[in-house]
Image 1 (cartoon, rainbow, N blue to C red):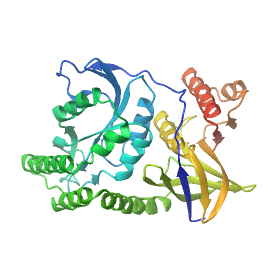
Image 2 (cartoon, one colour; image 1 turned 180 degrees about the vertical axis):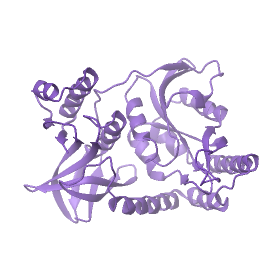
Image 3 (tube, one colour; image 1 turned 90 degrees about the vertical axis):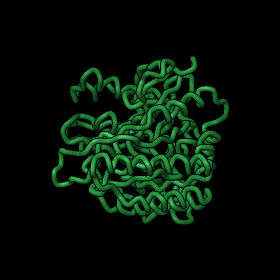
Length: 372
């Protein structure tokens, strides 16, 4: 099996695993956005907005999906996520750019995107083998604050807001600010960053027209997907199915190029399995599980799956594996006590199991918890 094709027409999901987010009052304007937690509530203009922060525009860095999951459906107000449009870690590090499908994915989840840029950084002194690398980058706080202030009084959909973020004039201004800022960081720290002409190329692709930006992003996403499908991550316990690429189209014109950890073809049903593994703990980390759940939000809203041109029946599964488990369980399940007692789960782990049980039962997907 080389690739699957899926479509999403509508989106719905009910959460049961919720974390209580701290609320910070931004009305005083004295709070630095960089000092806020990676996920929290903010109060601004007497409105509550749940926010999450990405450390990079690349979705595979530092669990942005887990942070989005925690802010999703966390309050009665808007949900927003703050994403740097560009992140340059120096010539010895990575260079990441915003992708169209990130905007489209957040729009699908009805999450407002706040684009920003980094204005300060420090030299990475931990790794002497990479002298031209920067770390601890700081967002331009007052720029983000102004966007949040506008959003607090905004009355249209996340889709409308997010498409407006791609307005050519605003994008040009933002990218130029990022380019100038990185030049100043390079001069200040005497560290070589990536060639600024890369930013110019990105600017051309992102502002030329929406189709050009979409194609530019998809080419990069496809390349990343091709690399990922050839690798096995230590946090995945692969072996019951086949690692498979999936191309998902939604009604907003977004395309997502994901890699499914396991696709199992059994009894004429395709099982689309997102796998998370723990070597040393009974369960994978909370962030790993939430990262998987956010992807399941998407997979669970697929209205169809095609294997080449053949429409297939399918089921969605989150598979959690561990070397420490004594026995397995499939959720939803009405008999959780035997599993929790035999594996000696602590109070927090038991609470997570019960919330996961309710979440998959309500949203009609499965969670397999298995001994690796």
